[in-house]
Length: 442
Image: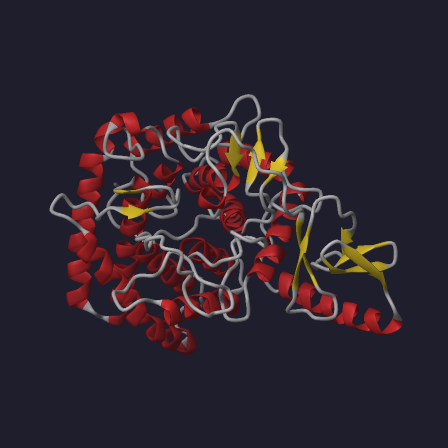
């Protein structure tokens, strides 16, 4: 959601700033932004952009391929293809599989050698948000790219603050948090433990190396879960914090739901390590938080804020699978929210009915939340319709944009790493049930 604070609210509609990203064919660590209007094709199974015997080597520029360059292009493409086909490519149709391939390759490029995940490849987006990066780690782990996911988790460990939380966002070169005055976003202490638990759940069970790596990550999870517990007030809800909308500091459904997921993930991990005392504290806090969510948000249909006039929020999907077991009341709340947030006639969804930005522009990550929810809840037809809409609204290079106008035009940046991650998880959930950390239904 980088653009929330980077672009003005109101009626302004951003233009399309990037059509996609490409890999420098001879400097494989370099990521190249592709502006709108650049025409070419990716060499299959890679992010090397090619057009009429020329390779894309700089923003907007192709150069003819020489014999020497042809050799490094070959090596770069082969390396990309080996990476791609070493894991799972979800999707039960050519269109959905093509979307998954590009999402995977774009996530690979967006993940830097130090484990930082760039939200997008433009100023204002080229930062690493712990929230977005947590989802990227889970998507990579669940598609079989566990080493890449582990690098992201190690980045979290290096950047965790003394209080157990994280700054709102970080520079992707590892130089530290972006100090622009914005407050920390509390939801990170929920999403990061979920990412660690998911990474462990995706591993072969009984592997000693994996257990040793999990043990190394455990102090980070423990500190994050303790931070979540400290944030809870007498009513069971967390303290006010900026959430994924990034435009207000209040107690929101998105933050409360993320903390519930994280506490349940921490409890599940504690069971692995036999830390009974901490597990009891976190489980009790999770129960208080769950009860607080039901009392404050559930009473009004699980809206954004704990009163009915605040309207629907796409974060209602965080309260169901694959994060939490599905309750009957939640199914109706999600369906009601989807109806309220879907743009007509264009399709796609808003973040919320009280969204302060342009209300004629759909956001792809929020749209994909519902695809993931329905696939995980067993309604593959409902999920498939949303995934087909997302696949049909990619850029000319196949990238998933951050936003789509009511007329179907892609705007803002493409790709958006968070959207890539959510879409990949939704496609996986279409094929098999994703693991749930557990705990009572909210």
